[in-house]
Image (cartoon, rainbow, N blue to C red; front, side):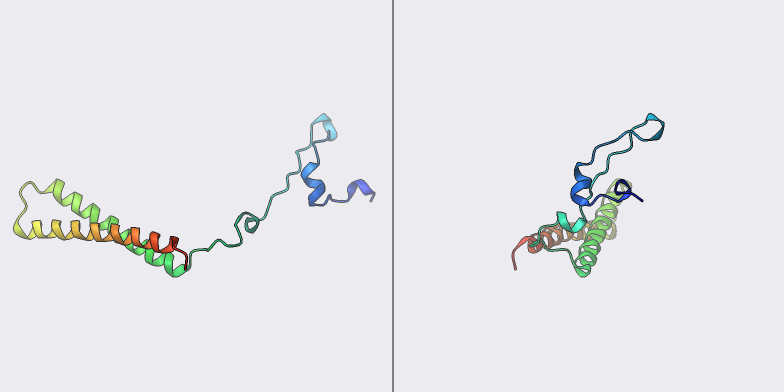
Length: 112
């Protein structure tokens, strides 16, 4: 084993250029990849699993209510009183869900 076989360190790997290998083809350039933690600022907050669960639950309920609302409005030409009440309830749930999503995002963005 000679010194050429020793793997280059990170500082050398960043600047190592492609060199011709056997067969006359150029060897691929060695690229230094940063760890994922190097790209996140030290003061950045990560989302907790509880926040993700609450956010996705609210988002799912909101989208579900909105889809049911749109489907009922498109399917029913003249809705009965009960169907009209269901449509209004789904519309209200979609509005409340949208407000909750905005509140969750806004609350997460504020400094604690």
